[in-house]
Image (cartoon, rainbow, N blue to C red; front, side, top):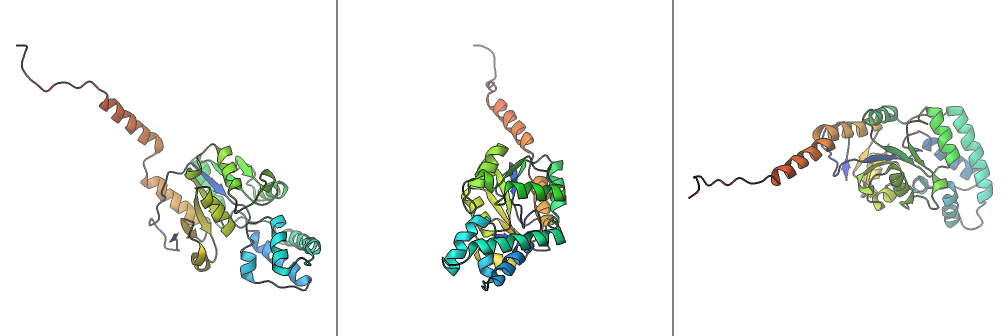
Length: 266
């Protein structure tokens, strides 16, 4: 794994050609995860319970329905999941209305860069379809992605790779040619299991480096990802150019060979 710091220039190289880019949504494209985290801790405390920050970090990227199992495992079967969810959604919606949905730093510029190069792009998220489209419309990215795969499109959630595999299938690209931008450990594991190239977007790169081994790099913002892609395309010969070169070589190899022997017929 390679870390990218503020001084990143051209040290990181991608191992394969990029055929498509897949984004997570919450905490990756849009800055909602911090609001969800605040609502989660508020709801837990309201019921008289407490959890550690690391416990919540392990839940990032997992759908709320999947979190029910984790909560009962942590607190026991008597934990009031229904009451927790009621308080959680009320508080979460209140925070979203108060603060609004905002893009993560550099996200708009990165998406514009991808659009300018016509790079296939998709969203693979554990959020519901309704919430996903509502938030994308709010930040003006509802027309920026041709493919959007939500938890409503997959029977299982991250870290299962199904949501990423489905996104690649709809894009019409190979798994190994997909670059995946994620902010959660389940997401990174799912993308790696699918044979893709995951990049971890994290505010706390020091903590991420302690346990993430399945990603290409840890970055702090989308500006660094755009710089990585700019370097990648600048340093690599375009696909169409390589194909032309291969065609020329094949033609040269199949031309009739002229004998170098001199002199007329005997």
